[in-house]
Length: 322
Image 1 (cartoon, rainbow, N blue to C red):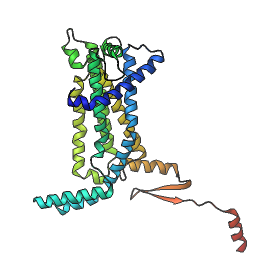
Image 2 (tube, rainbow, N blue to C red):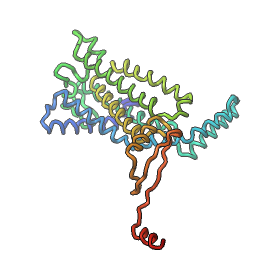
Image 3 (tube, one colour):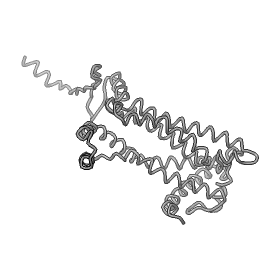
Image 4 (cartoon, helix red, strand yellow):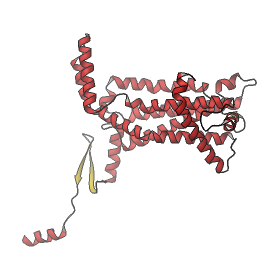
């Protein structure tokens, strides 16, 4: 076993366990154990379990992004302080002050990549499991030889093998048109969902300060660059792996929509839209108290006023004294 295989071994075991568990559940519900749709739904179930397990990490990522926005002015001061200074002493001092600021505020600029980094081993493990099942090879865990053979021979709609890719279908004799059509549709959906996810972040959930920074320009480049990654690499992956990827993309898109709607970045267009919705409702219940929400158009801020409960007996006594 190679080094990568040794690292992925426990992840592959867990992937097989979840995959086989979903397959058993769907079979118990009356579905054909050898049918491609059964294994596709098992892959979808695997994706849901993985993404649900990553929700706490995603919440931590959102909180870290909020802190990064809060310290952005302080980071800019440090950068301006050493602007134009290219000597080693200045670079080391700038790096040291930046790291001290991160440590003091408890922020981590790399945490935004953590959910993606944690998904990649699962993705490659599923890829290896599917490739092994293609030849009827048993997995490292619950995916025994019988299940592996079923998985490897499973076809979607009876015409599209799950182990086949667009590239493999194109080179087959004769070419497998059904696989090519399904793979092409999935690549389009994967590319579109990735683009929409990035677009709603760039267009709605960034503050004016962030849009004026160099990082925003990089984000705009990624907006149009990342979909091409799916466009070209998607044709090389088997259909089974593409179902995992597509389901994960759709989950990310929906999750990002809910976050932007309910937890927008302060000062962003999404935050202003949320304030407008609260203003139309007229009140919001927080901590058991009634809060009236008033949107101030010039500053685009929200002010709150607590409504104190009126004591009728006290009001009568005060009226009697008068």
